[in-house]
Length: 70
View 1 (tube, rainbow, N blue to C red):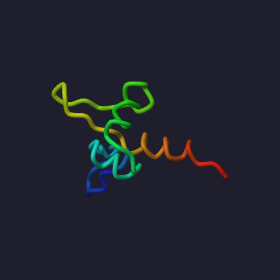
View 2 (view 1 turned 30 degrees about the vertical axis):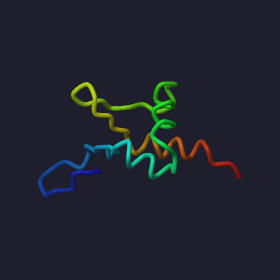
View 3 (view 1 turned 90 degrees about the vertical axis):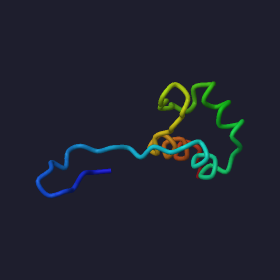
């Protein structure tokens, strides 16, 4: 997300953070599968307060792109 407010530089971007529920809905997988992939290091996570997990939307998109076969 780019900050496009007047008077603010547009160089800073923030990646949207997704909850585990949002990721499982996007990928159409179960939470146990998602957590197993996190344990295997296949999905980087952002952790808040030691327990709340979030996933960068760009990491999820990258995973989807890698799964695509022509």
